Amino acid sequence: MEQTEVRLKLNDGDVSWLPVEDQIVVLDLRTSRYMSLNDSAARLWAVLAGGGTFADLVATLQDAYGIDEERATGDTAAFLEGLRDRGLLDEAG
Image (cartoon, rainbow, N blue to C red; front, top):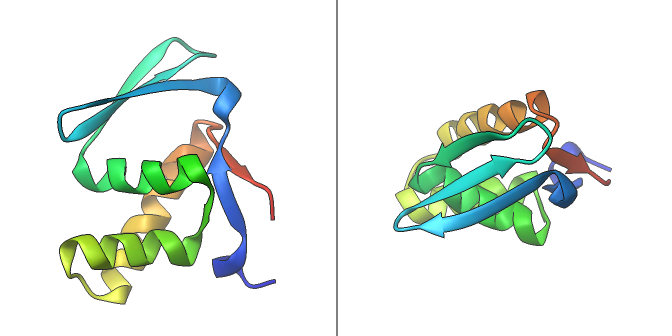
């Protein structure tokens, strides 16, 4: 299975989140730390909340901002790496 086809989702038991205007406020329940997600991160978060692939996330940024695939891929990879570092990403496969 290609990396772009791996199903990704949030570790739902570890976070609580709430949309606030054009961003999402996230509480990491394990560490009691808050994160505020800007518009682009909030769009990616919404895809992950329902479960999506890397390709879905890249397409979300391309559609929303009209950016090229290379930039959308880099931005998506950086966002996912941040979630991995915090233990908030479930890569079910």
